[in-house]
Image (cartoon, rainbow, N blue to C red; front, side, top):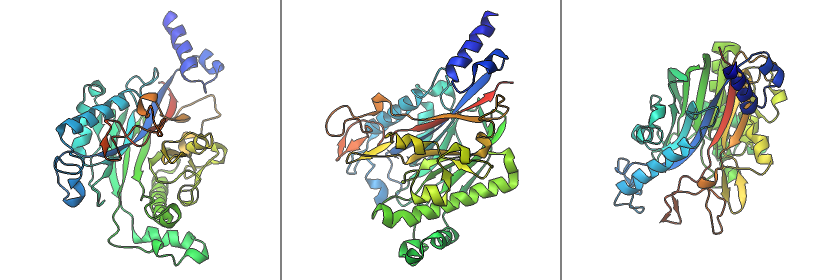
Length: 376
């Protein structure tokens, strides 16, 4: 009896969105975290990409040696280890990452003593054509998630054509909308698997940068959004409303910008999500409260977003949660991840600043969503 009472009290404390009546009826819930983190230039020390990789090598401008590399690995593992909660003692079930050089750096994080007991695994890895040699990837905890299939998508001429067609007439001839065979950016990874018994697709992206200006570079991110939209629609065509889709990444745009709000069509209000193809972006309201994941000249942005489809909102108003249901989101702006003094106080504590090694973490804060489901 004492054990049952403790479980009921824990459910009330840990899952505030679940009402007391549900607890009294004996329902038990499990929570699962899904996190995204831009690891900011996590390179090894070997120059394997010529000019673009020279900077992060012992003889490069940053003198990127073994000491600095293993310190970076230690810091990344520590940051991830601190993202556990009472309801998720083994940390996030799934972690999408960006700005990583290769599979080796991810395996080194998984082997770090701070997270080794979690037994994190690296989803099948893919090298993108990005000129800087950085990719996206997925870490997962096999206790909770089982990988079934992995595919990778690349920006295409079709995606740029769709972005151009959606542009206002006076901008349709903008050369930024033209496909360029020499344009290289990060490919998208899509990992389909079973999370808490539900079929879930996890899409991780790192959209083109704002180089040249936000408005001028927006067409490239709009094209990337249409590529993602194409993948989402394909998944729904195959699985209908039986698949949960989680889209995440460093989008280099805020939730209200054109690529996110129009091309991807991720909605601000959960009430507007009515079907499996509809997307809910909970970080829109987070940014509206002045909370971001990176800052520049006093201005906060929230590029690091996690979006979910209608599968996760279907039972949000029901007393029953027979499938994974969105509970809440968070920008994980922990104090230890922040610069503690100077004109950048409160900003993310990055690895380098103005060429000086700070032994920090990343120039982005991580983000996380929490899902809940009735325990069997």
